Length: 166
Length: 254
Image (cartoon, rainbow over all chains, first blue to last red):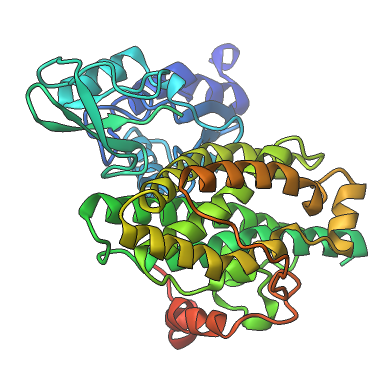
């Protein structure tokens, strides 16, 4: 029936998943280095918007040289391709600079559960992610990835990663 | 290119070549450090510096407008087109010398980036904002290590003093101004390098005192890297390592 036929533009708009829906999908894309948190938990997905039939996503790098950045971009594209989205433009946005304040509460809890102490404004871990002890010492300012430092618990004697606060 | 953009292009090369050459130098330690934690720390620092290089040289390519990417600028220029200061080209020496060089550079970079965060050129302010977070960690670590080794054993103290004496004549180049800097100052893009010296001397003086080290009392400063007039012999050797793949297999990608 001609009266219910949608214009092409409207049809495109109806078929487009909402940015919230896309954010939900991206919340299932794991960080390649720390697979217990998603790229959304990490706070690096800064903007999602449609421009006609093209999906624009702005991503911010955690650290300038983090090699995971390009893997993350590829994982995001693959995940959205799997949802049937093909016209995707990923843009790198460096300002405002990424901050660990953007980690989600869910992400922080998942980190600790995984054995990585979440970032604290005080500049060091609050407690050992393993035994929850609070007598801690710094082993090295840098850890296994750019975003982490190496600490040790002097109660259970286990070394652990601390997610640096920046 | 208009004269103004040429100056901006040169300024960006200076920023990017410093981080590129030092990033490469520091990466030479990968797998060779005295202890695993230090190996990881050095590799992480190198990674940050090379990441920052992508921003600086990426923007330089944009400003130049000849469609040269950050990779093109890094891997397809020869010695005379590099604008890195001589300090970052110097050989690593021992671990102490590497960390002393790192500290002398980190201290300058942390002050410089702090100023660039209020650059009139938004793209530069954005890079500075991003990089300064990383450099805050670098300078904290290198300063801590310089103090630990300087005020350490007799042997480590002696080596750190020797490193400082070797490297100090290369510090002055960071604070020399020329017509490119004048143009940057005029347009509110970057500070006059000489204006950073006071803050630098205060920071470096405080750390070296704590490290029980003595700053050489000689104002002589080597120069020629920043302007590209005369690099040290070391830069060519670095480039043979850094660029060989792109030279042997032009356009190779992964």
